[in-house]
Image 1 (cartoon, helix red, strand yellow):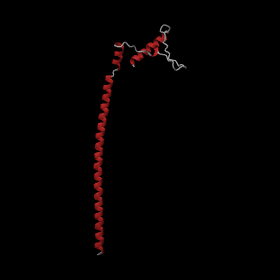
Image 2: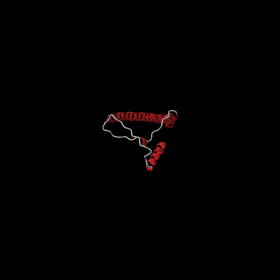
Image 3: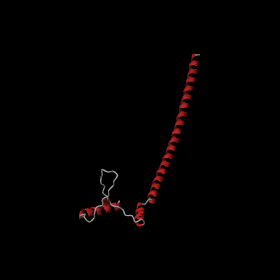
Image 4: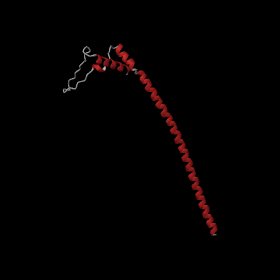
Length: 129
């Protein structure tokens, strides 16, 4: 009788262990499926992000094409008669009186050969910017 009781206890314990193993296996499979779905979703989102970044770059290029600074400069010079100032044409002076602004223009006639060469080089550098 004790053998059958022990055998019965072992059968119950075995059945419980089998149920636990099946439950753990089912949970593992569910976790793997969830992980696979998340990885697939991540790949899709990464693809969408790459497409959005490419679209952003294309829009930036189109924007830069529309705001062609050479065309704006040509329009300002040819149509409006504006003249681009050079760096050597402006000198800033620090004044104690903050309500007053002074503009002093350098005289071309008094300038020596080196300042003229420097200005010409400055004009060329401004053109190539």
